[in-house]
Amino acid sequence: MSSDRIKIVWIYPDLLSTYGDQGNTIVLERRAALRGIPTETVNLRSDEPVPADGDIYLLGGGEDRPQILAAQRLRGDGGLARAVQSGAVVFAVCAGYQLLGHEFGGEEGQLVPGLGILDIRSSRGEQRAVGEIVGDVAGELNVPRITGFENHQGVTHLGAGAQPFAKVTHGIGNGDGFEGAYSGRVLGTYMHGPALVRNPGLADLLLRWATGTELRPLDDSWAGRLREERLQAVSG
Ligand code: GLN
Picture (tube, rainbow, N blue to C red):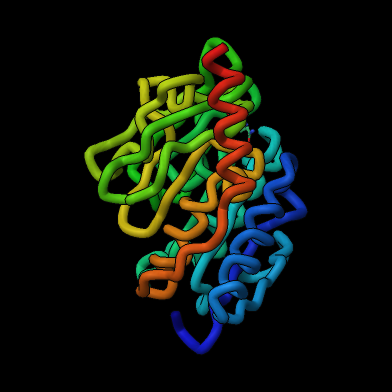
């Protein structure tokens, strides 16, 4: 944390926010406030420079063409890559996840250069993956089983520099039996939803990374009830 507050930078809501991903910002603000940690959120338009002093950068999902435009602008700006080198936390969903990698598939299947922040490559798959997704998170992250909603055409292959975020038990995810990827404090996922509303443990992982401290547990019984309901729905 660079100051007495967590600075959250929501990258390009004018391009990457088609699936209610703003909820992720609200959850981080709220869960920090309940621990007495102030936050400041910047909604960064795509014609503005990426600030260097963010603690958590959020990227949402988007359709193919806004995704390509976002990747071009972020590559030209360079600020997100520099922030990652300085230790910032990045949480990216779907289109935002894909564009963190080396390349991803555009609307005609053409390969579009990404930012190369995560060692992943995405391409356009045969079938669209739409529906509920459930997975068991990599043990070292200490996050309970995740549930979410996915809607994407892309498939994602991890290189040696990225770890799978979760092992899929229901749904598609990357297309290789796993869902999402992480490296250091950069984490990408196919879960829309918004993901952090449904998975408060994941929100707390990002806050732990940003603050460098353990956080007081909160009453998550409502989110727990929703998770049980979704788990029952996919198993029945
Ligand atoms: N355009 C990308 C895909 O279809 C991302 C979609 C999304 O963000 N939901 O794979």
